Length: 252
Length: 252
DNA sequence: CGGCGGTTTGATGTGACTCAAAAAGAGTGG
DNA sequence: CCACTCTTTTTGAGTCACATCAAACCGCCG
Image (spheres, rainbow over the protein chains, first blue to last red):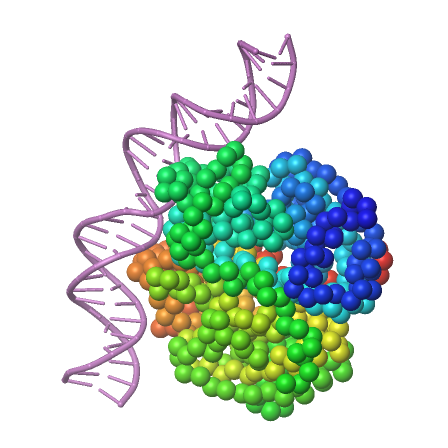
């Protein structure tokens, strides 16, 4: 196991938590040629309108996918943490409709699209896993839309923090109700569709009411039930149950 | 060609506008057993937390996908017009994280998930087309997030109307800059994340400034360039260019 | 012609934005 | 270990876009 395989192993662990892959598919996946690269904070990995030829996995650090508007304001549409596959979509979609950039020192491992598509073609289970991953992605986007469309600043902020908590937990990066979120308040605000100033006041409110605690960039969920209820959080959309099983496919 | 095949033909036309399918795949697709059903306005086709076993195509009318919050407010996350495949995602994702309902008299044609998955397995081109469709879906959700997160009421409203215009045009339901949108202002407001009252005033503003015209439920884009500029609309996210070609797959 | 969804209007309230500047950290070099 | 800078967080005051509530109006259909 080389260092550059680690993020792929994490990704495999993630998708296999839902459905096990056959041994040969696993092995084929792990033997794909990869390139590992380290980036400084706030570096664009993909720019809007680029035509990337590789997809990548997050090893350490954190990246976001974002869109920029005419007036310069930015909306972050998703964050990706270690073990996530970023930009799987660019495997099929030729021109990027959004950018991808780092927020802290980050290591990414990339794989050529052609290799991914061949892998998916050769191992239908992998293809299915990719499709499922895309579907969960879409589900998260939908929830995000609800978040910015219909919830106020307190609700959205706690909703996002809870989503992070669950995803970090699934990635094994969550202990004592605490996780590291190497992102500034301005960045978070860009994701939440509010201003940094207003996010700051919102965080203060959450702290004052003992819902969360913060120490530099680490976040502690202090009162999980209250947070869930404030956010109106329902974990269904993260679909931890995994995809429909192949066994169930036979004519019903 | 039976009546219940029509929506599938439209769907095929849609995906084949991007990439042609081999003849046997086409034929297999068209010979799937279907059920055609007509619904009245405001009927739930799928309820949140359901476990649907069939996906459907829109024949006539219009359906929306939506999520409901605790306080009863609703956020529509997408609309589907004739020729769209709705809820392709439920083929793999077991439990629905959102509802689907009609807004006007609507005919849907449904296909069993098991059939769709077998089709996709037997014809990789179809599997790829499904995956691509999911990706475009996700791209639309992302844009929608940007819309509600970072644009004001006028910008979002014109953005949504332009998206509709392009999609209706692609579906051949657009003439003289005009299309039928069988949806109330309250419904549109649910999609835009604003109140019906405010949407109403926004539409009045758009009319007064000669950007659009409305006659009952039909909408005319009166000044396309101005609308595009107001909305900050960029059509990339609809990905009309289609998926990466198989021919390009060979090791680069 | 009355009832009924849907649209429009009006008055008032407020959550979030804007601009600006102070305070607190974090990193760097002497 | 302390000055210095740069970034991030925090505070304050004024403003605006959009929400809320409520009523009137309109077109459609039986």
